[in-house]
Amino acid sequence: MIFMYYKYSDYLKEKYGEKVYKLPINIPVTCPNRDGTKGYGGCIFCSQAGAGFETFSPITPIEIQVSSNMEYIGKKYNAKKFIGYFQNYSNTYLPAEVFYNNLLKVSKFDNIVEIAVSTRPDCITREHLLYAKKIKDDTGIEIMFEMGLQTANDEALKILNRGHTVDDFKNSSDMINEYGLKAGAHVILGLFTDTKEDVKNTALFLNECRVSNVKCHSLYILKNTKLATMYERGEITLKTKDEFIDEVFTFLSYLNPDIPVQRLLGRAPEEETIFENWGHSWRKIQNEIEEKMRETGFFQGQGLKLKNY
Image 1 (spheres, rainbow, N blue to C red):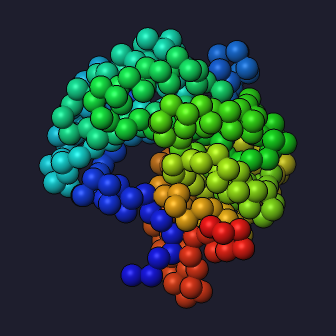
Image 2 (image 1 turned 180 degrees about the vertical axis):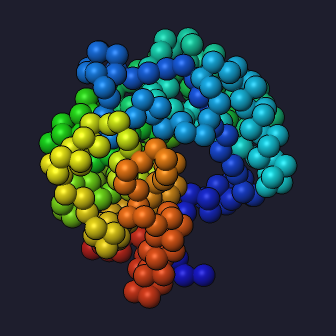
Image 3 (image 1 turned 45 degrees about the vertical axis):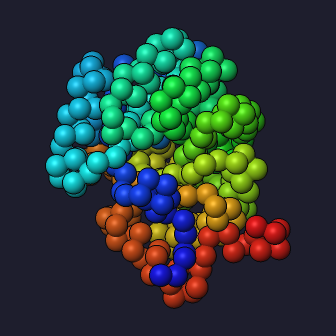
């Protein structure tokens, strides 16, 4: 098969010898961009539900969430290895001792091979990392921090009301790598704030940060968000599907080919959105992207050939 881009699922299969499945975990946390520490209302694209559309209630004990999801996914897919994924909001935005206890609960399950922690780059301290390293050293379980960057354009981060800077991401990724842990990144392609040059610079920035993987999102608009209000008032112009696909090519072209890609675009429940993926399923658009890659002979990192990648 022709190599087009490095899929995270392939990376996991190479590392663990079989397919690995994520188990979503939802805990009662918020973020500093909601509680007044840095702002109120969150990012302009984030709803009150955060990203946890298909998770348990946050008050459900972690052990029950893990065991229930493991049993269901294990039976459905004959799965034997799993990643415990703290998915919603900023899962390091709590005392380090509580964070450690949360990781400890997940690490006790025999079939857990990694723990992924979704968070913000400005919510990670050395104390969090010391506790995460202890879990890794004691159990052999890899720990990854999935940090929302979205774009390496500081002006765009202000418009999106992210409440952190590009430097915050670099500082946290450097610390995470220093402790022998994994730094992952979330980016949004198709942003109305960004040019193709911004997209290229985001990929180059992530290479510099030595991230272990990246998850790409398309820009969808959730109901009852600031972004929805801006869209309805005609204050923003969304990229077309073709422009989005072009940005995917640009991003992957300048991304180090050793960095696995978790996905190329995101999705949300139809009833929660007023715009999502131009009315197409995420799979249809992904298939269109991959077909174009095959037709053009595209491969991840091809824009870096002159930089010895």
